[in-house]
Length: 372
Image (cartoon, rainbow, N blue to C red; front, side, top):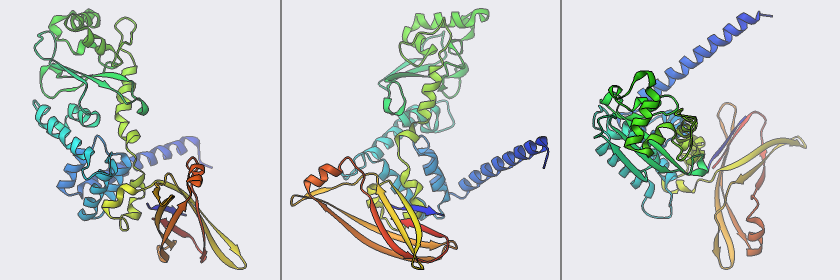
């Protein structure tokens, strides 16, 4: 665990300058992002492509800030450790499952595309969501462009409905399958134009689909099963479902370790990275009798105790670094903090956070604190 603390013009012209600044900043940010990816090795570019459905924005930014291939290799090991759903076992079940998803996607979704199957739209959603509960194929119907209907059970704790659909189709019957957007496109996008009257395209297209599959026709209007729309007007709930799917990695996978990774990477070995504990802390410098003191407090989000000889025990290895504003090291010390409490104390404390507080001497100036 490592945490970081760092301490008269006209309106028209003003607005113009703000807009110019925004455009320049946006261009600089884009150029910086592209440059960052340019200095990454081909192998690490491939890795970024593989994990693009599940990597968070913070994790990606930190990865691109690393200065060597060795640092990036270590980050990759940390990344998979953090996603391991069962860190107490020898195997990383999440990694194995994700690699199987890539294998399946490359094998099944690459047809008609110049990209690997895992890099297509179907691949993106398959890697992120996993295999659907049901996958129906509509490739032999002359009235429809080739398409697939996927049926998922959603993770409601992350903003998804309990069940939902996704449709992937080949526009004009050629090339790569892509995601269908009920809110923007409508059923007529799925039907070959020669089978309906363009003056009544939506109603007729819906009826054509309904005669083939009522379930597919309903999904062409809304990805939310059982939702009734006014006439054949698509529902806006589909757009919300797609947006929540795209936000799933930010909600489902914690990137707290990545926000502090640049500070603690040199102290924590990869095999212990799953023990990273998200924490909050405060630091205050005050003066007493012409001597400056630093008072800091650290509050771990959780603590794992082991029962040993009728006592609940835990041990923390704390590394404290203090630097001045110029980055010069003023103090670095390592301390072991043992905790041993009775069962009664454990019951009283289990619902409350535990706070570490320590005083130490300080020199004047702007200070930077790192806790690991």
